Amino acid sequence: MWIIRRIMRSRVKLIVGGNRALRNPLWIVQHICSYLKIKIAKIKILCKLGDNAPIKVAFYGHGLWVRPFGPDHGVSIDTLGDEFDPLIGILPQDFNGLIVDGGGYIGTAAIRLKEIYPKATVVTIEPHAENYSLLERNISGKNKIIAIKAALVPEIRKGTVNVYDVGSGSWGFTVEENAKGKTKSKIVDIANTITLSNICDYFSNAKIGIVKLDIEGSEKSLFESNDRNLLNGSFVLVELHERKIKGCNAAFKNFSKGRKIIKSKFHEKYLVYPN
Image (cartoon, rainbow, N blue to C red; front, side, top):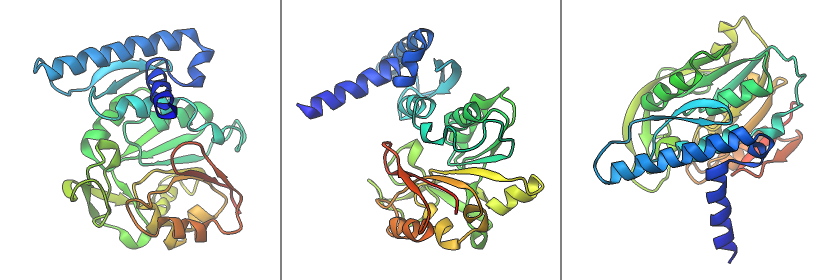
């Protein structure tokens, strides 16, 4: 029975949104209309009357482009909902430094981070071309959200990297060649790399307040590099991918030793406080 209840809760969340949506009846209406629009698009695709091209919907007051099939819908509901609530209040409300969004996907995380800290500059980084194209469309017109098509890596890994599909879908592309997944890895794109030092240099050594990492196993090499920008006074919100890259958990444990850690209810996400 608990499995059925869990499925029903997930379905209701997709239709009306998360708890945050309950604060605004207009959002609920938007979500229901968007859910139906996505359903109709899926039926057309299954009937071979259309393809999986992005369609315009609205979640939490934001017009967004999503692909009917795939995780775009669910990811948007989560990221614009309460997934990033642990970040509320950890910095001053008028914080005007940098927030780094590693693993930008289609841009919804960057949009929510910008809502939480309106005066900050959000740098969102996504290595896959199709995801990045949607990201650019979704942040268009939004002030101080800067998109970079690249893979976030430590200093020792500069250059270009392959982007791999390991059967996790568009939100699970990785630049780790040996990542484990549902299928054998295949190359789907090539991306330039960028480091946290590159970002700091570009913004004249502006303070990085938060580093959000959802980079499908590449967090292991970042944590093992002891990158000073991760260690020096930044909050780090990370989703660990031990299931893809063995050693992520150990690298995280070593990195976060002696620091306050809060486990999120979302997946394997952890918020690490500064030293």
